[in-house]
Image 1: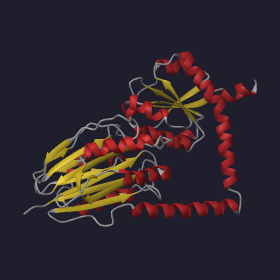
Image 2: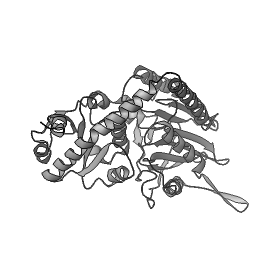
Image 3: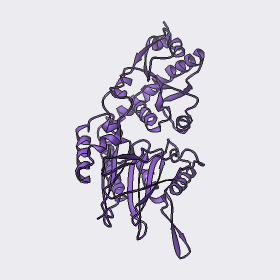
Image 4: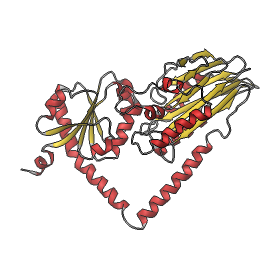
Length: 399
């Protein structure tokens, strides 16, 4: 048996999909590789350590950049290479993958058996090189003296970056005039891909938003700082000004991000609201972000749906404007999708009903509600599924 045959014979291939492998996948794998189903209730990276290859067939989340990038980050922490079988109509997911580099090969879900087999062979030939390179990096990290001090220096730099990022968050939330704000900001690491802000725009208007950069680490944190500086809330016109509507603000922010031509899959989601405190009319817009939630005093739960794709993907994207009349006793909640992962039940592929779960805490003071969420974060701090969690709450109380 030659070396190539020895390396490829019965190599384990991890399969991750919403259902059983399709016929073309089974035929391409044949008897050369051993197809092993992934455990969706367990972290992916440890499973990849037992397989040199992976075949990932996204289901409804083919157009979910957060889920896709989360999978790719798991891949980057392993030495495996994955074939991503993408449906032809997953335009958003394909756009994200086209700008992303990593240990994956993107293939049409309807690819022929011959094409899939060829891609698997190519991945098999490349995988030992990736494994060897990662082994060299790991060995370099274990070198005494210089390697240790270098990582200590990196740790200190991350601490400073975290401190700088928190300086970009509002130091004091503008309570008053019947409005009370509260926020929870819990990064998964030193720095976060989440950011929020609350600003008095003039005597009667307040603007507040929450944004979530796809991915983790310094690149995501740097994008949040760009968002903070680039978000246009007011436009100066001569000696006067104009408050920028939420959908216009997101449109211009999207153009700004696209014009940077960022690499490494630098996209983000956001939800932005502007409230007229005199009339309690709330304007809002979304860019691929979880829908803001309104918990009314009578127990009604309202979600603020407005169309709009991620920021930084399509330069000509249009964001739908929305408006709603708030009432005294309303609670408005903006959150990032880390809260969805936090509240998800084990093995539940549909995802949690976040608005209904939040409604269970509607009668609690906003600080106490955030305390319960914070306790959930602490109780799952070792979970591999944990993401940055940010929640912004506004209570409306008028006499």
